[in-house]
Image (cartoon, rainbow, N blue to C red; front, side, top):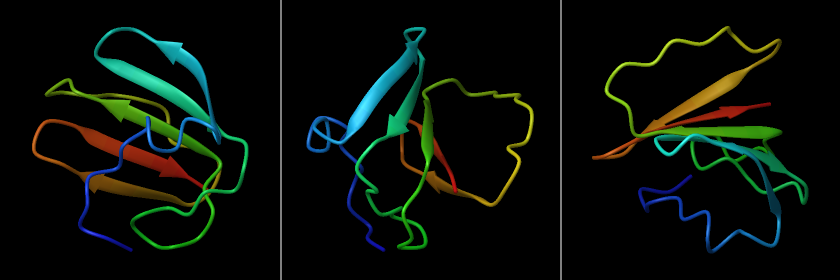
Length: 76
């Protein structure tokens, strides 16, 4: 767990971009990177720079990290 900003470019070797709409991105974790919120490996990552977001809830546990300009949702 860390207060540092999660930089997808630093972890690009382990992440696969599945969708990018400009203000939202959906990434697949292919190398069992740790979630910055809980420390456990996460499955997928949704990053959104939009002020308002609406999405179906994932099937399992999830963590949310809020940064100054975006929100990150990590599914487990």
